[in-house]
Image 1 (cartoon, rainbow, N blue to C red):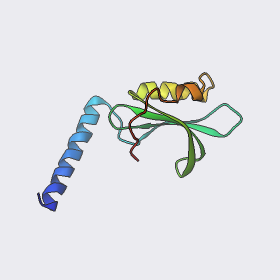
Image 2 (image 1 turned 135 degrees about the horizontal axis):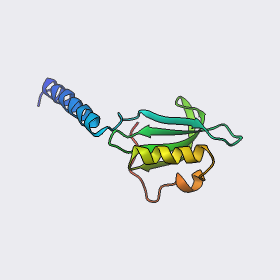
Image 3 (image 1 turned 90 degrees about the vertical axis):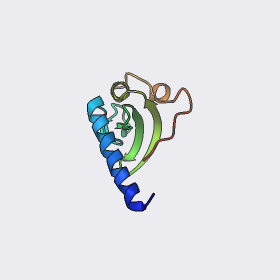
Image 4 (image 1 turned 30 degrees about the horizontal axis):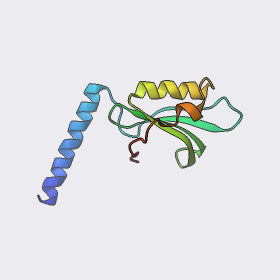
Amino acid sequence: MKTMEMRRRLIRLSREATDLRQKLRFSEPNKLLYRSFTSAPESRLVVVEADGCGGAWTSMVEGRFPLDYLVLYERHFETETEAIRTAEDVAQLRADPELVLQPATVARSRSR
């Protein structure tokens, strides 16, 4: 397959993926869905980023997100709603990030 043919196919597939996401009401990959500082005295941030397939990553970070930061806790959730609900609980100190943001099993790798 020639480069131009592959490029056209990639563009077509990208459009199809975007159309499917809109029909399913999924967010675009890496879209920031939630961002909040925790109520704790430390300046930690809780963020939720969509994976593009209906799920999302919830993370607690320190630093200047999204430029220069350290991920303290992170977990992938199957739905965006579940990820946001957990992030809200962590940000408002209703849930311990050490418990709710640690994966139960080894999660699939995160693409950036």
